[in-house]
Length: 95
Image 1 (spheres, rainbow, N blue to C red):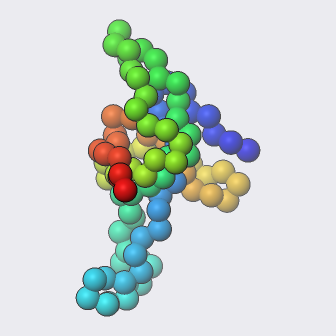
Image 2: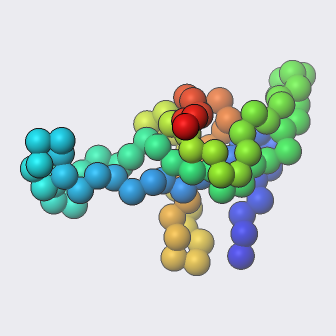
Image 3: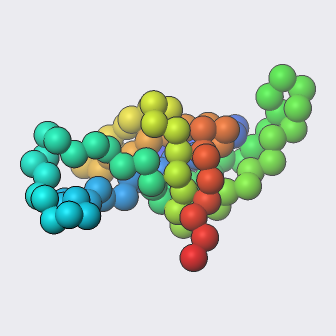
C-alpha cells in the first residue's frame, strides 16, 4: 500500500534519533525526543488555498526539518508516517 497526499500535503518518515549524546551518554528509549528531521516519502500535487496557488517545492527523497508539533501521525503496514502541510516544513537539508 502507498499513501498519496492531497493538495499541499506531504508524507514524511522520521529519521532515527541518536542513541547517545555527544558526550557519550546512552539515552533510554523514554528519554529520547522524537527527531524533527525526516525524509519525504510522497508529495501532493499542490493546488489553491484561499485563492492562492500553492506550488510544491518538495520532492520524494528530500531530507527536511519540520515543526515540532505539526502533522498527523499514521501507521501503514507497520510503518509510522507523518502527514503535514508544506507550510510546516522549515527547510530542506542540502549536502
